Length: 299
Length: 314
Image (cartoon, rainbow over all chains, first blue to last red; front, side, top):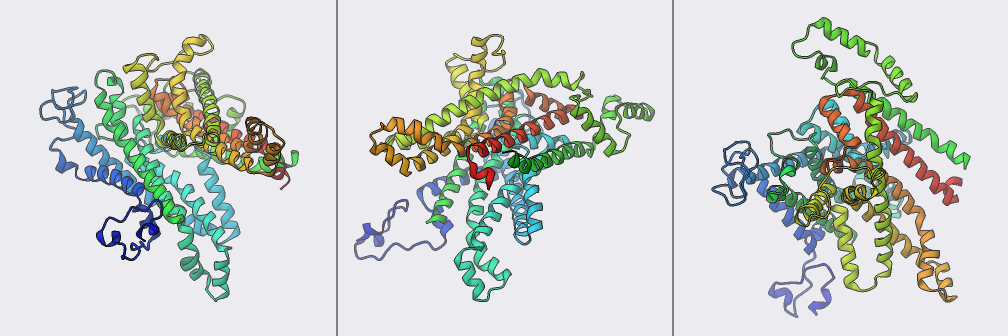
């Protein structure tokens, strides 16, 4: 019976073979993360995020307007002339600014999240080797966590001046303790599980134990955290550029457009709508992906 | 209790000392020189040197740090280089406004967190549960500045019942002040309240499954009373810790919400100071926020230890 093989969350088999009563069970996806992502929730999240980031990447193909080129047509609504989404207060094409703003976000996410992941996980690995190292790393994480996100943003901006490099640095610093704490905790838990003891008894050395047995199991929360971190990066870029300590004008960024649109909210609501929709969709999509990964890892 | 305080205090002090030194040091390591900024365009080296000497920027770093900390401990944050006036006055002007916003948001956080947490265990039908979890997810993940824009759009522009931004002190004019406070405080409270609600719900579910809840039920005590008088007090300790952590989130979030709603608080001051490289002001605001954050965490841990003996004896 094909219906018996259905578990909640997995899409119904659509292919004729799977629907036929004599067919075998639908092929189970081996990789647990992929299995999670292929749920309806994960696919929807992937579609949202993929679509937006693809639009950002393809910005030069999708619009012929320069995002910083000023024209005399200021504050036009959508569909005026050849400006599909209208123009801002100094006549720059809004669609082009939005698409290139997504591009800026993509750059920041692509730089900051892997950096935070790399440094955080390295520190976590160091912490699990030795007691003294553990204390030192834990204190470092405590120190980094004693600055609330935007306060850290202000501090780093005071040192480096506003710009993309500053945002990347801030996001990296924020993500180091979240990745680090997660991996450290997971390694400590899995190292004392019975399977790890069994592997040790079976003669696995410390390195083999870590790489072949403990890490593959301890990686789950870290993989989920990657999606969460990407959404935090998007939120933080928006926040920092919005209060004027992020991407510097005239370069387009989602938070920057939002700040520029604030005085025109009443007369030109579509001006602010673009970045609001894009930020919300990105954050919702990334959180759906995180949740899908989490479910896939737990099943 | 004193023993616990003695064990807990050094780490709090350590974080404070490290953070204060970091704030001091990194701001001194910057490229931009305030003396050159102050001297105006095309200054002579002598006038820059004179300003630098006047501000004490030519002394060794540790001496400068010592002098700064000694002043700070006495409650003197020095003078602003660029905005002008004493930093104490600048802080005093803005601090009250930020406290007003944060306390307003804290009240909303607790009220909404308890409400949605309790609803989470009392609402039984499937539609209600789906709705609750949707509301919870949306308020958790949509950034506060995005929901701020949406609220301004709906309640100040489409249906103008509230001011779109600005500030009137709630102490000088409670009614008008409340109208100005309502939207920013609510927006700021949304993400922390969603986190709080989840902890309240989990705690209540666990408490309601305990033996004493079953005993109370078998004694014929009405479910409402079991929930509020028996389950809730037992579910609160972890909630308290989470609430303490959220104070930091509220303070950090206040910086950006102040920008959305043109609220003249510490966040706006910090923003002005950072864009103009006004060191004493930046240092004072950052140090102040970090101190508040560390102290609130310490108080949270102490409150937790007071409620739960296992923590202070363990």
